[in-house]
Every structure is written in C-alpha cells, then in structure tokens.
Image (cartoon, rainbow over all chains, first blue to last red; front, side):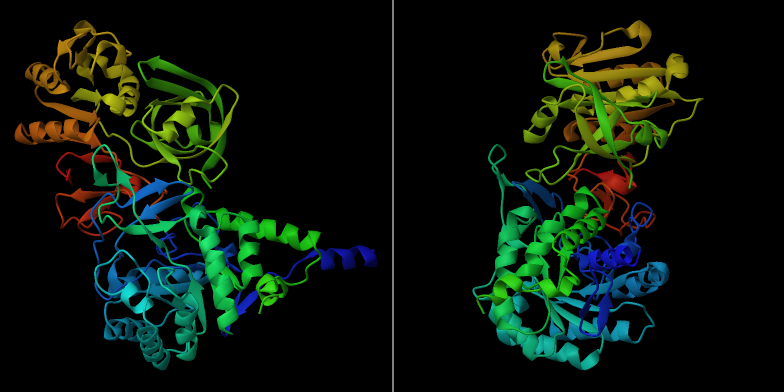
Length: 318
Length: 262
C-alpha cells in the first residue's frame, strides 16, 4: 500500500510555477486578445483551472477598433487586425474587474498606449483601485495600430524607458510583451530586464498580409496585419531560445500553441510559462486538455516538477 | 463546452454546387432555440485550417441537424468530401434566432447560400403557411431545390429566367408585398441582396429581420473578428461598444434598421 502511494506521488508532476512573486497553478495562460476580458466564456469553460488569463489590451480611452474585415484564415494560421478594440480603462475598472472576484485564476491586465504618459496613467488608475489582478502585461508590440504599440517594441531605449517608468509605479507583476518584428529580439528583452521587468512574453504576432486575387484587394482591411497560429510556432520557439540565452528573468512563450507537446517545446526552449492564443478560437477550453497532456508526459518521463524542464534544450548551448 | 462529436448521416449535392449535410447531434439539438442560429464546424482535427466554419442551421429535429452549403473555398471543399459515418466536432448552437408573431404575415426571402436559415424558418412556420410567403433567388434553374408554386406561396426567381420569375428576389418581394401589406420580412443572402432588401423595407416601413454574414473566428465573442457596423451608434445594448456589433454573439439576426452594410 505504501509503495502504491509512493508511486502515485512520484507520478504527479508539480505543475505550479512562479513568475516574480506570483504563483501560477500551472504554466498555461491564455494570450491577450484571444480570450476577451476573461469573462465571456465562463459558462462554457471552467477557467479556474487555467494558470491564468491575460486580458485583451486595455487603453486609456475606449477604442472602436478597425473596420472589417478584421480576420482571415491562412495556412495553419490566421491574420488579425482588430485594432485594440476595447472599452477603455475606466469602464474596465467599473465593469470587468468586479467580475474577477470569483474567477479563481490569475488575471493579468494587458495595457497598450501611444505615449509613456498614457501607459503610466492607465496603471495609476488601476493601482488606485482595489482589484484582484496579479499584474500587467505591457503591449509594446501591436502591429495593427497607427500610433504607439510597436514603435516602443522595436527600440531598446524606448523599451527601457517605458519599463523603468512603469516599474516605479507598481509592485505588481510587470511583463513586457515582445515583438518578433525586430532585428534582435534578445536585445529588447535585455532592455526590459535591465529596467526592472519581472518577465518578458514572446512573441506577439508576426506582420503578415494576404490578398484576394479576384477582388485585387487585401483580405484584411488594414492590409498589414498580425499572423498567429501554428504557422508561427517555430518562430516563437526560436525567439524564446534566443531570449533565454540573453536574460535571467522568466520568459512566457507564445505562438501557435495547440497542445501539451507544444507547451513542452516552449518550456524546453526556455519558457517558464506559455500563453495559448489562436487555439482558443477553435476551443476555448483547449488549455484544459494541454494541462492533462503535460501531466501524462510528466508521468511517462517521471518528472517531479515542470520547472525542472525550463530551458533544458537551450541551456545546452549556453 | 458546447462542443459535440457529431456523426454524419448524409452529405449530398442537392442542386448545382449546393450541398446538404445531415448529422446526428443530440446535445446541440437539445439546446437549439430556433431558425437563425448557427453552428461552428471544425473541418479537421489537424491544424492546417485552425478556424471553425460557421454554418447556419437548416433544420433541427429528432436529434438531427442539417446544414446547406455551397463550395466556395478549401473549407467547404473539405466538408463536401465527408461521407456518412464520418465524425465532425461541432460547437453550438450559437447566436440568436428569428422572432415572429403568430398573427402577422410573413415574407421569407433567401438568396444564394442564404438559403439555410430561411428554409429552416419556413419549416418552423409550418402551421402559419397560409400567412407566409417564401421567396428564393438563384442564378439559374439548376441552383434551385424547390419548385416555383405561387399557389403554395412559394416564389422562385432566376437571374437568367430559366425558372420562376425572371430577375432577382427584389422583383418577387415587390410583387408579394403588394398582396401582403402589413407583413414582416425575414431575409438572408449575399450582402448586395440584403442591402437592397434593407432599403426597400426601410422605405416602406416594413418590420424586417436580416441574417447577416461576417468572416468569423471563434463564434463565442472572444476574438472580436466578426463585426458589423451599427446604424444607431448610441445603442449600448450590445456586447461591445457603440460603433460595431459582434455578429456571433449579438447576431446573426438583426432588425433591418440596426445595421449598415459598408
């Protein structure tokens, strides 16, 4: 009997991970913009089992977003150009944050701005409000808006300056979300680390475009848009691998994650946690099946803690 | 989750390039609210096509659901290759449904692939047939699955005049409306058709509900992809904010006066 219990215990992989001071029950988080405000599908899916939820980007003022068409499927992926449509920080605080008191998982608020002072103003508003959110993910990498967004994400100095300013006003978890549309993603990650970020998340969407040859028009209104889905997974994994060699703070891997095996690829490349995005559109409960698949992997290879796997492959080349 | 692995019973071409698929879906059927609702079909367990395909429900009875589709692209081609006994993962039922009064006259207008919810509503109005009219438009005779039969209140139109009334559904709508004033219009079809119906019903102050289409991602309100412009930007009674509405959760059925076709 004792032996049986011992075996049972051995086979249970510890799924919890820590980023900054925050404990996550497992490493699977839903990515910004792919899970609304976190409350839309709670009648369909038990989100309390998720490691966490990152909200869609919240801006200082409400944004209508871009005209249609906003999305189109592409081979093993999709292009989107939503344009940061959201209700704005004031309505977010009054209407959405109260809904989180019973949600049972870590909520990370994603924020986007066009100037440093806008990012500061948003965080100041949230900090002066009582809420259960565990931290912020800073969107410096949105390819689909005219001003702001990516111009921070492609510049080391601006990334550092922005992160530094935000670090001063919050003790909550501060995650900087990086763009793959840069020459050297690792150097941007270093700037975020230097300025006091608790973690970086990578990658945001890859700039893409698709054309309807019969209408001789772009399939997405804004012409350029963001590519996501399994098509970009190898880019995401390579980015995490490069960043892992360059910084010591945790990395949250993003890009084309559809199953437990994909999560493990990211973790072995150096991610401490991951965010699932496009796959939520097929199945908003897909994170739950990923968790089960990782538990099976843990049993098969007798792994005691998911953290033991972080960067195993990338460390070899460090 | 509202997903179900459904078993295909039939999948046949019922008119030129128009297919009907019927499958066993007890779980989805039990939550079905009425004509106008749709489902999201996963084409394949692989990830070559990550997004599900939205399909309007053409009928729902005895735990069976059917859809009607036209082969447009790769996705609908994959669907057409499925055979009886194949299993598909389906999410649904989703969206709202047509709302009608038992006392009013009903004119139903369908065109092209906008057939499915209109035929569904026609079946739903079975007991009210004396007060209801069905108008279906197509390019030519070989795209029609009904017979032109004004005695039964069924009016077909063809662009090339090969069957029923020559011209578009607008000709039939004007004709039927002359004899059925104080009616309510229900329509689904290509955007240019909906646009014409919209201006006709607004001009004549006819209450109307339109089933609209939009390129859709998730179907449950989280991707914000499937938007349509609202006419009344001040209307806050919808899931998002003022300018756009999300077709998947606010629609797909809208009052004709509420939306703008850009």
